[in-house]
Image 1 (cartoon, one colour):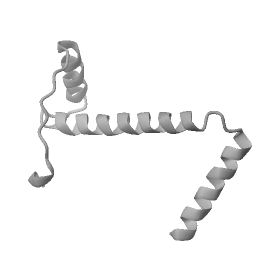
Image 2: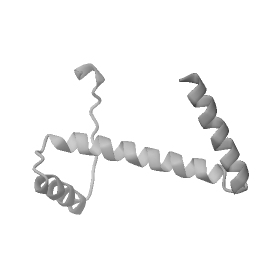
Image 3: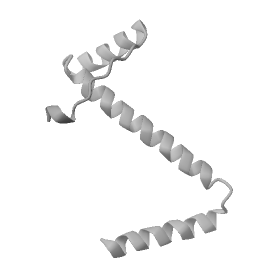
Image 4: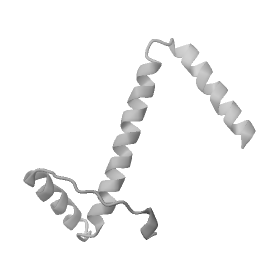
Length: 81
């Protein structure tokens, strides 16, 4: 697993550091859990931004056309699986 680890050096405000460490401590997490917490937060943020971009690209599409596209994609995906 050590081959799959990349070290980051990040800087955050003192308030953010205190808030995150307090949050982790309240849930019984240890200092070593900070890396896992950050990785999960980054993954969620990337997903959120990706979804927002996708929604933006379909914003002008009428709802019935979007529903038809989604139905087609679901059907095609199920057929492959």
